[in-house]
Length: 293
Image 1 (tube, rainbow, N blue to C red):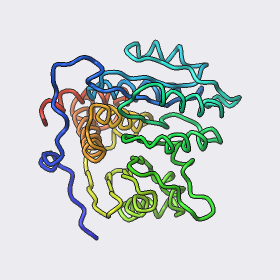
Image 2: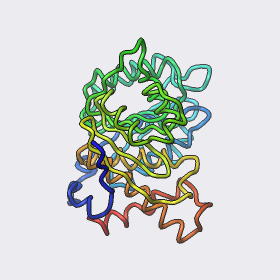
Image 3: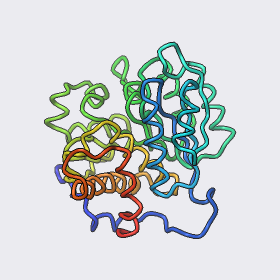
Image 4: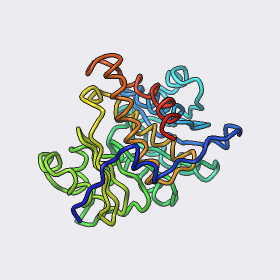
């Protein structure tokens, strides 16, 4: 299959988001965001803010205990859960079991795991717990993608999950070179989607979205200003918020990519082609949503 559909506002009409309605915060969706480490606590705050800007009603941030109070102050609208930390400032192995118990106790509409987290054994344990929970709306990013790396030649299935790799993470997922992932993003995205039975966004100057059956979309836009630290965290948060609101995984992913890119384009007009901050991107999302729906 060679066709790759351009992701435009017109194309998004085929993938409607849930309507906005008068309701309490629970009805607007509940997101569990597992994010951050002692070195990158800002990732959790950036992603959580983006989720709320996308219309999510309630966000719970699960992050490491040393930075939890600071994240709570940065995002006062969110509930913050402190997880035990390892000596390297990442989540400890016991945190995986703690999060699994939380998933059983509380009803979350979507889960996003990975922004700002550090690679390690704890992430591998957490991946198992998340996949065993058979979540309908799960997205994994950053360190969590390395934890999905196939071992012994057998890929781990992640049915219905959404994976958000850049070129280095893609290289680890499908055992190719980083250069190959950069030069052939569409082919790599399709191979990854088929291997893991997941929806895949291959991030880059042109974004490529692929399904396990080979269907694909591409988005050209946003501009160079989006190539900054925290931009991917914003995208993950937008996606998590739309999933929590009840959007289907495919609709949420397509909209998240488009909203993230269009927000970058608007900031380029207001601020300049480069120089705006990742935390400023999500402030453009509410107006874009209102105009496009």
